View (cartoon, rainbow, N blue to C red):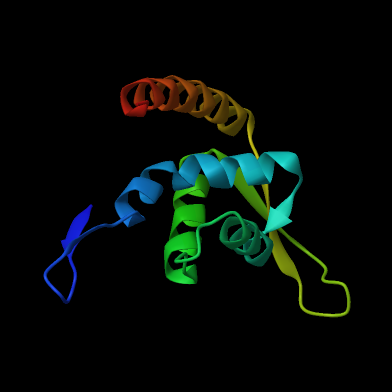
Length: 116
């Protein structure tokens, strides 16, 4: 999470911190409505995950599907090719609820420590 810059200074690398929360964020996006990969990527990037690549997102979606947390189905596109839409399963909703509770607890603990 810490890396040395070209000038020898130390910089904080957010990528590992964000990777730990990416699954929960993806599940939350999917919980709002059935959606497809490009829309998920756009929402994540607009929310600050600017370094997200398809090489990260699509394997993660496949893993969530294999875990039974989401399910995928192809739907006809509007004037274009069909798209793979993702929805949450019951297990996915339960996992998301547990993730959100854990995030709130962890976030509160970190905030308490970081307050001046």
